[in-house]
Length: 325
Image (cartoon, rainbow, N blue to C red):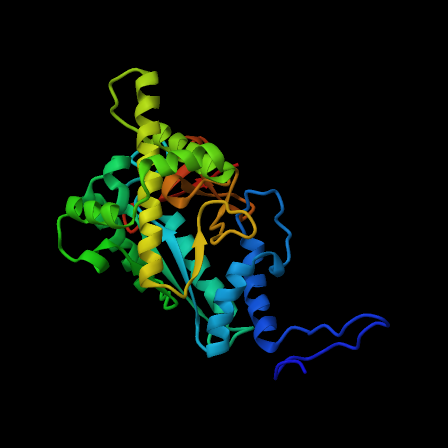
């Protein structure tokens, strides 16, 4: 006999009976199907079915079976790049505003297929590696505080914020980073071996090295010295990102894990695209928004964007670029 609540399909001649999806499984797949159009893929297969993501389906099913809102966690929204060739300033702008509205709207969509809906915890990781990317902790605090203000002003009630201040209170940030590193980060040699053996980890390491090269300002050494320094820092950024992920998992153990980085089908994290960009690694905190005359909104480095039009202010601060042609 099948388990209670499991439907069975009439078997074909000579074939055993196979169970049809339960109501929980159908609803979980429907929730995941709302995320699939926004998937950030690194495997060249963007049109996969929900069944290709068993880790995410299992976690969604836990909330569906309990009749609870689906909880998602997204590490990101750390701080703006220190390079003014990429961004309009050190505070959130139109890129963050549109991305937060998109995430809140995605959670609202979940209620169509799962009435309790969804909520998303933005796990802002700027303080975790601010010293490695050259951004002062004061700027990171200002960025995080303004991010919270955007959530309040825009009425994005399905979003919440989580950062090192929620975990370790008022300790000095260097002490916070040391504690997180000691408790959660993998050993450097372990990570080096993984970079050598795993293509996805190698791609992440190379992507972060590229970001560090592009974002470093004020370096007075040679280009080759800068490359060596960025490769060293890239390992530390990956280590601390892993540590932050482990800490998030400890505090939100049931949550569906999202990532702003491209992810393969079957990975523990689901890569999510926030806004359109030519480069899949581009984020709102490494770029600015361009409003095109046809209504499209695209992420682009500031230096390139400002060749297309004029910078628009919102509340007295640079917000986005309005393309003129």
